[in-house]
Amino acid sequence: MSTDIAQLPEVRAALGDVDTLEQRLANYKVVNAEQFEAGATDLMQVKAAQKKLEDTRLGITRPMNEAIKQVLNLFRAPGDRLAAIERTIKRELGAFAERLEKLRLAEQAVAQEKARKEQERLEARAAAAAAAGKIEKAEELQERAQAVVAPVISREPPKVIGISQRVQWKFLVEKAELVPREFLCVDESKVRQYVNAMKGDARIAGVKIWSEGSYAARAAGSPTAETA
Image (cartoon, rainbow, N blue to C red; front, side, top):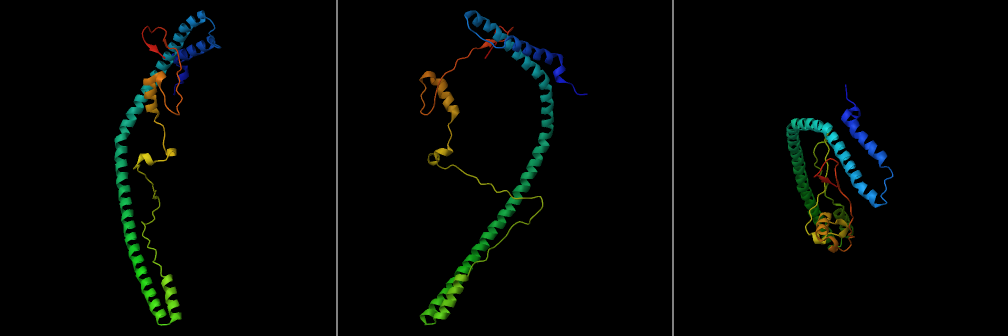
């Protein structure tokens, strides 16, 4: 029988603390020094409730995560073996298709060269006929020359149900300085490092830089650990 996690005592206690703090600190305002000082205690109680909630969650999820980890480890190696077999088959299918395409291109080149020579032969005959005053014959030969077209060579792998070819277009950046601006992006990691190092002296064209303050507090009952 499945367990209702929300009814576990530790979960109810952690959620109850959240409800209590939410009700007590609703419409929270700090308008004087006394309330500011009390805010430190309130903040520590909130941090303690956050830690309790997180510890309770981890107490439930850690065993689940460990079980999931064991399952993943069990199936990872067989999955990798199947993936290797899949890559081998796909590589061989692709190699066969590439060999057919190279053969097709070679045969197409031969057909085009044959057509070109036939065109030249007919055009030469047309020129000779024209020189001999045989105008009609020359026109006929010229039309035949223009009609010569190389046949389209087709060589494709057999159509097999369940297999389809996916064409992927790839790219390689050869000269980054020539890439148009619309294809570029700001390296926010470098900007962050620069701003953290320079702080108020940071200046970057096109970038707004400012600071924000926040308060941190220790969890109630924790004399040393401070959390944001």
